[in-house]
Length: 384
Image (cartoon, rainbow, N blue to C red; front, side):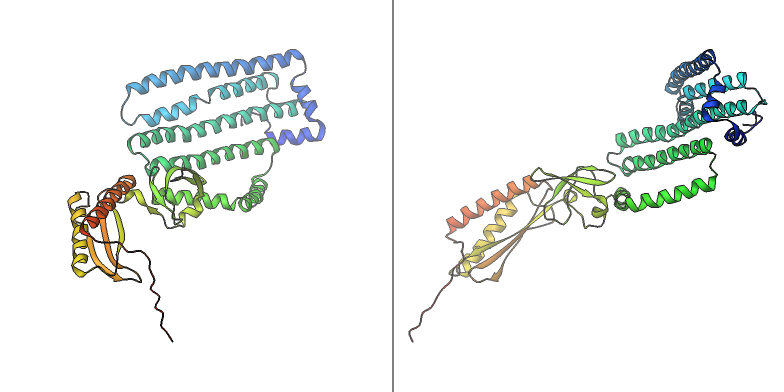
């Protein structure tokens, strides 16, 4: 900005006193030919920037394919700069018109206002180009690292957390660019801009409390990693579900009934989550009720039958022998408690094994003359 005799703020002060915005535009483009020259310079600058961008990106791509090691950071920074060349060329076209038609110093208030108008246009496009460079500097490395993490570490915390960090940084970059543009257009002091930001930030924070809670809930889930995509979990509802997606606001589960439910991450982060798919075995507890007229020898035989069926199956978890014992005298049954651990986490296979065990127990008990009890009640009537 030192190349100009008057800075933007001083020029605007003069223009406000004597020249309106439309008069400044008329002074900047006094004839149709001048406007056409301005458009031509802008188009030439933009086209030159696009051509240079295409050429340099192609050259960068070829060099990157031949280079190994830590040179990737240099190419990322260079590509981010190359992608902003069209906007920089457009800004150069505006600057060329300004220096040719309104050289330093200006001779009248109208020329000062016109020069200030062109200066503002030049700096706004320059700020947009700067914002684009910063945006790409954030986006490109995150894209490469995320692709690497997803390829080599499926569902890793890095692959899940990078989009969150990238989104925050990109929002800050855009916010910074808008702040600079407002500063150039309005000549608002930094203190006034910060005051407006503070008021706006307070309003936004009050209106988006739940969103902020869900965002931090997502961060906690990503950092702590109680489960990953594809895991079967129970969140205390008694209905397990498969994790299909972990989003910024919520996590989606596919239930056994094939219903998809969405749970806010702020709520999920505060729940007791049971990761069913992480277990190495499935434990089952069942009770076999025998009739009260079953003699002790038949009870011992029933216990031996059940133990034999489970032990001979070869499908129990190693180091976890089945537990079968006469446990209780209930109201209508002599209860035998059966506890075993199936050596897999596949629920469907565990259910199929339970089906086989139940059928075999039913056959063996029938052959041995052992009867299952059902709820009964004896009523004794006495003559008074």
